Image 1 (cartoon, rainbow, N blue to C red):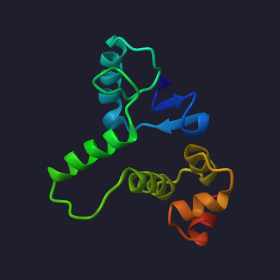
Image 2: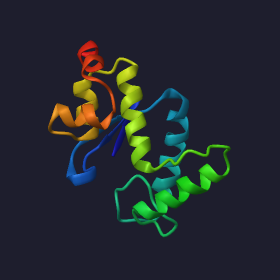
Image 3: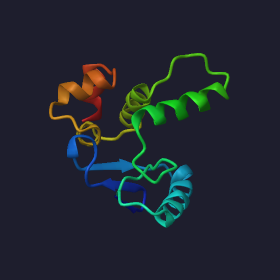
Length: 129
């Protein structure tokens, strides 16, 4: 994992795929601070997100963290890690990111998968290309 400018480059993401993840300037400082702290931990993993033992953060722990954060808000809608992924992809497309980049970001082989995943219409996709 490498942070350059406003991107995180992940060498081995889900399914061992290479990913490039855009980072909004509003959270770049927080991520940079976290990475400096994370790099001080004694660990053998290269994972970005670590648990208290210095091991790769497990999916169920991430879900628990998300649920804990949601309980501190007035949000009543069910939000999952997967729905956040949908939302991020949709917002990227709505803000003019080319669909091919979103497809690569999501790790999809087929453009149709990206279309369904982001819940946008074919007409919206055509306008973004």
